[in-house]
Image (cartoon, rainbow, N blue to C red; front, side):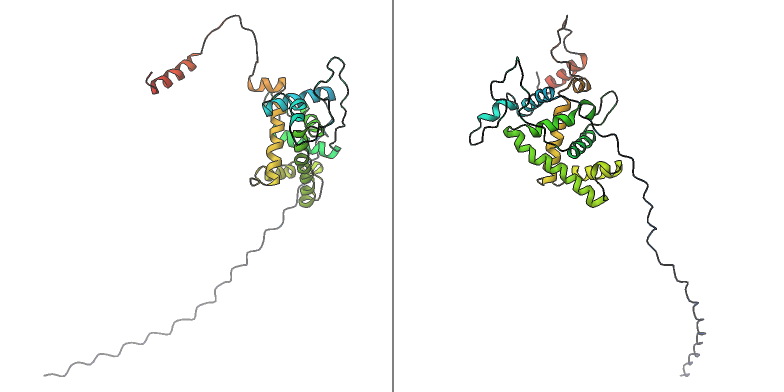
Length: 257
């Protein structure tokens, strides 16, 4: 038996060349802070447009609409366990109306914040005017000033919310809400609109928005915006439109009628 062949010694690998040191990547640095653009000049301050008599009538209309009842100056006094407010009472003099026995209580600064809020909810759009053009801030001022139960309940919510917007602006931007730029005011209002449910901010936003919308759409301009014509006499009755008839036909077919 022939001896097995021995394996040839394996060739030793040539020593690898030392790797060139990798170029170090530059460290990522924070972007240079943007230079803030000069704030937008604040708009013209809101000027009261609605007299007390008109505003009080407006409060009564909106109160009746929101409550589905007889109006704020009547039903409020009959609730048990609540103090009777000093207002016009249940039998006001309509032939010789008296001046409002209470003052408007919003401060000048609060009225300006209310004006910005109102136009945030209902800005000018197409042929529809902005809320401030219709005097909605005056309605809000009259609403929180009235000494009736529902208005007294809203008073703390609205006034505290307006002051919170001012303090938040001071804390965040270092300036009063009405002196802040349009973008800064918008940021604060958007944050307010996104507040978590059942928080004071959420309660304020919902109630304030309801009052703004309720006031706006009880005006002639608000009626026109939604196409409401009210009780208008017609010379003929054209009947339902073809679109309405088609909708009814589909509904009847589903009901197999």
